[in-house]
Length: 393
Length: 93
Image 1: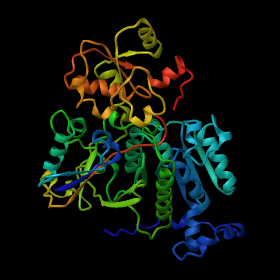
Image 2 (image 1 turned 90 degrees about the vertical axis):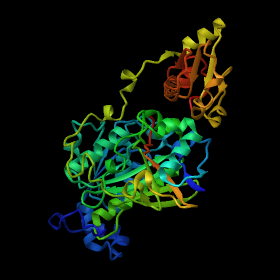
Image 3 (image 1 turned 30 degrees about the vertical axis):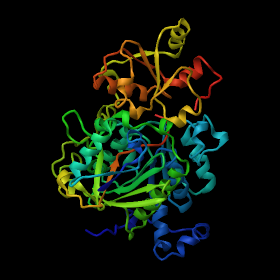
Image 4 (image 1 turned 180 degrees about the vertical axis):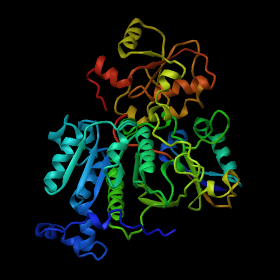
């Protein structure tokens, strides 16, 4: 199988460039691999970018600058001040605005000839196919597994290439999932990790330039798919480690047993992706007793004997320490379970109350018999409801 | 000795180690030894039935062991096993 892909854009859709466009795209016209024909293909192309965050920001900016004709932006979120550390399409004045509106303004000021279509909504199994089918290529700038699997399956069903990027702390992944030229995302990862293992950037942190680098790789791959004639990342998974400044390339193959793109697919329409990713487990899993910040405060004021276990990482505790909390990072709970006293109520605390929930479940599964409480909504709720002098980081 | 490269997403279970040296002749032995050394990691590598979870891919020499001999894939002295998990980052959940 040739690794060189043909252009996604048929000849019949190409239109001429005007004088202004000739000037604007001069540095593309000088490249024999792009030239006038390539620039016409970019002008005729329609790209959907899902997520207007860390990955979507550089993706959208470079595609707009490159002369892509239509950019669709799908995001349901609003701009928060903590986004500005990496989501460079948004500015201070955009805080609290819908991300797609903020991004649209920025893109239109960069390139007035660009047409932007905004979808201020969450992509779901009900709306995904009708939106995606309007585009030649889909770029994945999402931050969560349900949307990622939804996009993968929808792209397989519609025969659209999916330009994949994903990030975690200092590490990124990029690839192109294109039917006939390599695997889909499910060939690689048939099922997602349990929710306890996939903390968001809001819990785990991320180096701001990392999505910039991965998003730019996605932009390059998107442009190459439109131009044709280039060797894309289809069939290859690119790993990037910003801390070691190291790229690793791995070979990935289509799985003939893949439930979506395999020889005998068992998934032939979009499914319930929240359920698939185990996100409803809170309701279906074993119940965990919780305390609100105010309830915990009341018990402390009463002088109740409690074991308060702060499962945050050392660098998070450096932001602020919880008085009376015993430090035991999330990843050491099982190994150190003998240190707990089963006769005393234990309260697990973390930043947002998610890791603590999984810590409690893991400890139960490991056979711990004492009473365990989760601080609901974590130390952020403590900072909000009990001690506003503390930062919500 | 072989080297197992641990992705950031799993390093909180390996005392922040990014590379772990082990004695192992096959991929299966290497993963078992890793789970043995880091009990907090074990539940994330294996499911309740003792099967390896499918969100972690194992690569030797740039190839996925699924396309080699799976867990029976031999590891030569000094070889590197790379763990590649599914990751998802972006904005707050």
